[in-house]
Length: 244
Ligand SMILES: [Zn+2]
Image (cartoon, protein in one colour):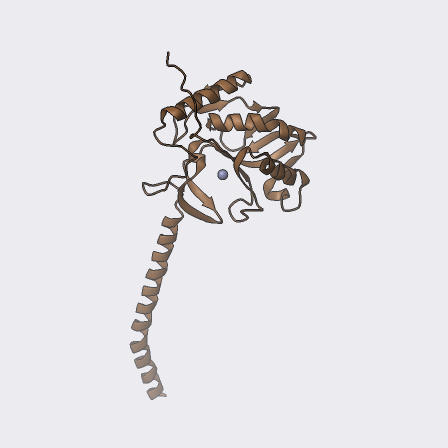
């Protein structure tokens, strides 16, 4: 009995520190891994964040881009769409706060008010909205338009600047139809909601947007919203307006 006790004390004395050291080092590794993962998942853009720009987009904007922004505003004016200029943010070429109703559809920000849009997004929505209206949509509820952030896709943050940082993308949470029914992407898309699937098809067929991310093509990062993105091309030839 005594011998057994002695052995167990010896064993405990010899094994324990080594085991503890191993445990400590594995905890260190896990902590490092976690920190690394956390750093990787930081969505705030840094100096190394790659640009994810539309064709011809440069920053600061060149004359062609300014001319196209002027042209965009002129088109909104022609269509009688009211907007207020907004303060400069991120890489938004022509920041504005548009009227809520565009092309027969009311756009409502569900989280924070005063969402800044680039003119190109406003114009794209105003142009496309009548097609949403024909599908029976009356209101679009969106989470955010401008957001200074990196791209998030497939459950991972990529070191690429999101086009939300340009004010040309919108994250849509739900669509309200002419009966007042709210068709929510998170709750209704997977259940086969016809309106949501019709909208997805119509957006893709229209060719008016660069990208529509949905629970179908990105189930990990877009299970609860549609990411809709305008598609400006700044390589286009425009005649700069004479400055007054
Ligand atoms: Zn988005």
